[in-house]
Amino acid sequence: MTTQNTFLAIFLGSKTSPKMAAWNALSESERQKKAQEGIAAWRAWVEKHQQAIVTMGGPLGKTKKISESGIEDISNALSGFTVVSAESHEAAAKLFENHPHFAFFPGESVEVMPVLPIPGE
Image 1 (spheres, helix red, strand yellow):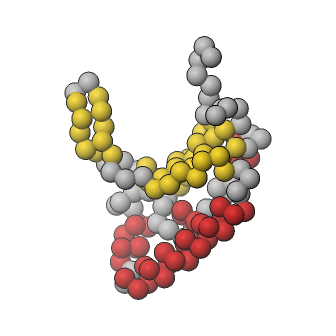
Image 2 (cartoon, rainbow, N blue to C red):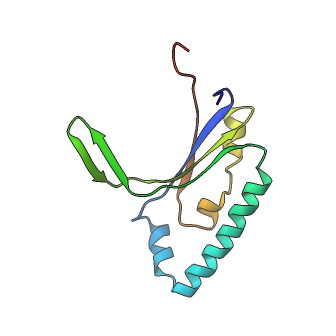
Image 3 (cartoon, rainbow, N blue to C red):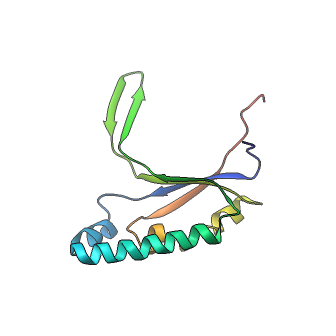
C-alpha cells in the first residue's frame, strides 16, 4: 500500500462519557431503534465515500498492552478505525464531518492522521 494521501481515522469514545451514559439509560427497544438508524446512516456514509475508503476497518475489541513489563489488559478510548485516501489531510478530515459514530452513536470523535512512509524506504 502506498502511503501518499493515505490517512488513518481512529474512532474514539469513552465508556464513562455523558453520551454513553445517556445511551445506556435508553430502554432496550430505544437503543435497538437508534442502533438500526445508526447502522443505516453508517452504510450510507460508506456508500457516499466508497471511492475514498482504502480499508473499511471496523470496531476494535479489548486491548492488550505489551511493554518491557510484559502483557496486561488495559482500557482506552479507541473504538474503531478506517483507512481512507484523500487529496489532503483537510479533505480526509472533512469525510468524517457529522459521521454516524457521534451523530447517531455515543462515540465522541474521529481523529484523522496521515500514514507516513517508513523512514529510509
